[in-house]
Length: 164
Ligand code: HEC
Image (cartoon, rainbow, N blue to C red; front, top):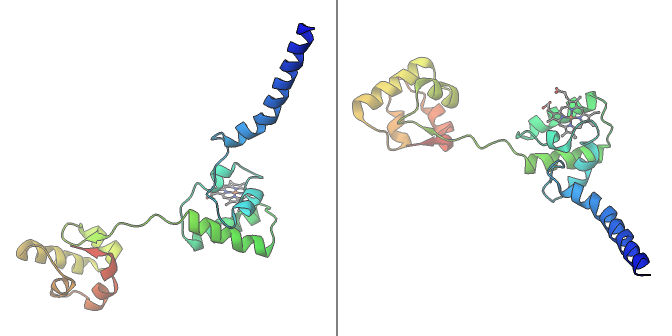
């Protein structure tokens, strides 16, 4: 009698375990936990069929980048509706955006950085560095525009990424 009761208890416990197991698996790090929000369901539906979901969200990029990735997946055979595409791209762009690029410190940046980030010509970048070596640190955007040969319009256009 006691024996039967105990085994009934064991069966019950096993059943409970069987019910909990899928939940435990879902919570495990094997499955990427995506942030909540509109589009999450669609990403989970579309983006885990050929590789893990974690791989799908392994990038940080802007809207163009996510659109390109999406198109690539379509080329691999991913099926989707137009509505799914819109919400998936919105979701990925919002939750996995391009890394913020650090600003350019014009008092310490090397020539290559001045060229690539501010779009200066090589001669302008070296003029800037010469000027800063001779006169000391720049303090304002107007100081920068005093550099001989510098393109003031270009400096103005890039002022949001410039720090001193
Ligand atoms: C039809 C199959 C399929 C589906 C569905 C799919 N992918 Fe992929 N994905 C692939 C293949 C194949 C690769 C590997 C190709 C490679 O490494 O260039 C890949 C690689 C990736 C990569 C890493 C390489 C890269 O191009 O950046 C990312 C990121 C990615 N997929 C995102 C997604 C997203 C986001 C979704 C859902 C919108 C998705 N995938 C759905 C087939 C698929």
